Length: 233
Ligand SMILES: O=C(O)C(O)[C@@H](O)[C@H](O)[C@H](O)COP(=O)(O)O
Image (cartoon, rainbow, N blue to C red; front, side):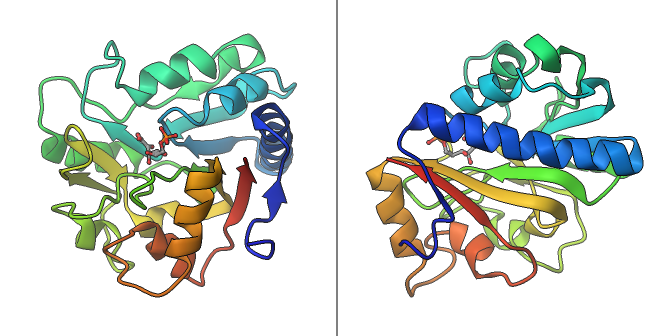
């Protein structure tokens, strides 16, 4: 594992601060070069400390657009909403002025939403400055879930769509996710995982086996974009 985990840290806080510093450096670089920067972040429980550390970074947040790698198809008032998580832990302190583009539209299905959001995101400048992925213990990343009904489309490098709507036994509710070719259009791509269990899942994913069994393999096996792995016990 020593060779695949690029960044090992002693604990959550140290990792959160280091990742926040690295991300802030990338954002500042794009702001300086292009006047703006963009970032897609993951939801779930892992990113909270990182979001809080990042929200304290000094940079011109009014030039930063933030969105999500994926979203659970629930309104932003739900505790399951990744937008709620970002609102409460990232869009605060110095990052208060950043623009946020949600991946949820009220009153339509995830499938209809995927289409409408694709049009909305068509004008967003790419590559994204930063994309941060997480990973579940079932080997999913973004909403690329094992047994996902649209998994093959979502990880198809030839898929021209920006988003896929996915339902899967382990997903809880319908979800929307950026497709793999979109996520790889990033200047800095990171995988943020914590704990021994996820380290072992990563190790398994790096071994042989079907991509569909552990969809994180679609990210780990592609050769287009380097994946920077940040891990702590
Ligand atoms: O909405 C989500 O659930 C995600 O964006 C998802 O892909 C997440 O990164 C992993 O499930 C890890 O989640 P945990 O940090 O909760 O383990």
